[in-house]
Image (cartoon, rainbow, N blue to C red):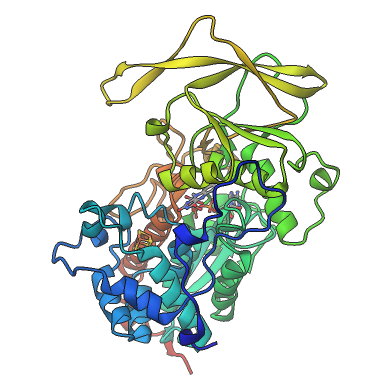
Length: 485
Ligand SMILES: Cc1cc2nc3c(=O)[nH]c(=O)nc-3n(C[C@H](O)[C@H](O)[C@H](O)COP(=O)(O)OP(=O)(O)OC[C@H]3O[C@@H](n4cnc5c(N)ncnc54)[C@H](O)[C@@H]3O)c2cc1C
Ligand code: SF4
């Protein structure tokens, strides 16, 4: 479909209207999938070209936003796409799921002057979708083949961005992932209503067609040690993300139907992909007709409550120990959840889970916020005698993620980690303490964002190239190089 035929719908327009009760079944779609060039151009033309590109500064990829907005406003979409994709391996994905209110759009000068931000993310998505539809997204073809080979552990956005950059330079790239599908949290974490899986598959298909070798169902630690991969490759990148959900230890926390967020979201995403998921099919992980209580206040908690709404829950409540102003997640996500009928129980924390075999309720108490500590954050304190009970047939815990014990899992006891268990790297070279072993994404930063993982993947690719060139001599002088046909 030519871009002129597409209709443009902003995030705000695509958000379901405020509902009195929790909506029954997923009949709404917030991914603004209909666009029109005139609307995109109109939005892009709102950019004041202010000369101080705060939007660009606050984009982790330093995307050249003002320039591609100017090109879009002038209807020069192909050039806008080329510019947008020069700094971003997945612009259509970032356009959909970056928390723009905290990054580019939140720092738009027009937003600061209370006139409403230029919808940068939606335009970025529009430009790139137009590129896919018009055949402007070219195949991944290295200019020449190079003999060094790189092994990448993890096919999330960090690993994929690094793989693309290294393959583009002509290196042999093998990506190992323990999942059966590629994309990491893009596929099994982030819900379909925020990011359609076909968008991720389209990207990974292009990478596979470009010669990147993917090894799915391959778990490092089970199917190979880190040393095995070091023997097999000239450099190794660890981009394994963080997957250990923080637990909750309270009376009754062993009851059935109290589940970690990733278990719940993975089941829902697998269903969306057409998989058979026994624990969903028997109702255990399906929120339909249940009173669902989600514990936590980050973006993962928002994904859980909004998934439960779409599953047709009887009620969806979010229990968070701080107040709205102190939510760690994106305000846009909180507003979306509120609009969809989610009830937020602010300043409240669980004290026990009630039930006989399976959970039937959550006993909680009120919290108050203390004076700010040295970090400026107010510590929540329980209010005595403030207990209350919520009905619950399904409790989802979304309390954040910690890294797994990578040195033990990978059989690499000498691999250094930080006090938080993330991999310790030299931030200039992105190399761990092991020669030729690099790391990127959440496993270095702790739970973060897709756009930061992409940035890290790109930086790691650059550093790996430097490392290989220093080790093997200048690449150009390598007699093994052959021009690609
Ligand atoms: C529910 C949820 C929703 C989110 N929503 C957003 C959002 O809307 N916007 C946003 O910007 N960010 C969001 N994030 C954060 C974002 O998804 C992550 O920051 C990002 O995916 C990190 O990328 P990564 O490549 O470092 O790791 P991951 O995406 O986690 O990928 C790591 C990969 O490594 C593989 N792996 C792990 N261990 C091994 C092993 N031993 N052997 C082989 N493979 C292994 C995993 O299977 C996985 O495929 C969300 C996170 C969650 C949990
Ligand atoms: S990558 Fe994210 S932060 Fe950067 S311009 Fe796009 S939406 Fe904004």
